[in-house]
Image (cartoon, rainbow, N blue to C red; front, side, top):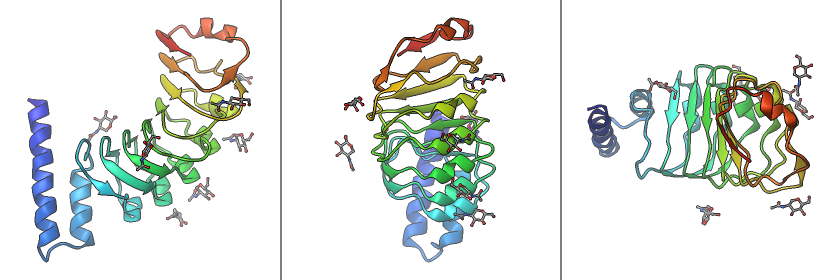
Length: 207
Ligand SMILES: *[C@@H]1O[C@H](CO)[C@@H](O)[C@H](O)[C@H]1NC(C)=O
Ligand SMILES: *[C@@H]1O[C@H](CO)[C@@H](O)[C@H](O)[C@H]1NC(C)=O
Ligand SMILES: *[C@@H]1O[C@H](CO)[C@@H](O)[C@H](O)[C@H]1NC(C)=O
Ligand SMILES: *[C@@H]1O[C@H](CO)[C@@H](O)[C@H](O)[C@H]1NC(C)=O
Ligand SMILES: *[C@@H]1O[C@H](CO)[C@@H](O)[C@H](O)[C@H]1NC(C)=O
Ligand SMILES: *[C@@H]1O[C@H](CO)[C@@H](O)[C@H](O)[C@H]1NC(C)=O
Ligand SMILES: *[C@@H]1O[C@H](CO)[C@@H](O)[C@H](O)[C@H]1NC(C)=O
């Protein structure tokens, strides 16, 4: 029921999008209107880049997973103070701006399976409202910034396939709410920390 509703919403979006494109009512305002009501655009065949104008919309969720989007995430997205969830899994994005560290309401960030270059941004340590951070096979390089330890609300932390210099296991002692922790193929060295035994909520551990 829910799925079919979602599917018809998606079909409606595609129809409206095409109508807007071919008719004279297509302009920035109508496009913004569309995005505002249909910000779940996941699993389509959308290509191109994210328009920087989205940075001025009061979006709560952005879901673009499973498309063919390219380019950099616009720095303006870091200004969306209402944004709670950003899902851009499985696209071809290449740039991840430091400005995303300014997202003050963000709960969930899903960045897996992209073509990002550069280091995992240290500014992410400012996202203290995050509960879910998933950066699997993103193309980013390490090391994992040690002050990721500041993200004490995290319940789900998955970072995998991070090339870059060897680094010790990040200090996660204070992430007492962690339920799932995956740090596979991140060039971590040294011993497995003993504090993991104190993370009593943890039921999925893959390192
Ligand atoms: C926004 O995303 C959150 C977290 O993924 C989800 O719980 C919520 O239902 C979403 N809200 C809307 C309006 O889609
Ligand atoms: C973000 O918002 C601030 C304050 O309103 C503004 O000064 C800044 O130019 C904005 N940044 C971008 C990239 O739009
Ligand atoms: C956002 O973050 C960038 C880089 O992390 C910073 O230089 C900038 O001042 C921040 N902008 C706002 C509006 O907070
Ligand atoms: C993205 O990365 C994958 C795997 O590294 C590569 O095969 C693909 O050609 C890249 N795609 C683009 C559009 O850059
Ligand atoms: C994280 O650590 C880096 C380098 O050690 C530092 O530049 C940055 O300001 C720190 N960020 C926070 C939020 O503490
Ligand atoms: C792991 O770290 C070592 C030493 O810093 C480096 O030589 C090697 O290339 C790294 N591996 C990857 C996959 O980045
Ligand atoms: C964990 O919290 C304690 C108490 O607030 C603090 O002293 C310690 O430095 C924190 N550890 C890490 C790795 O952030």
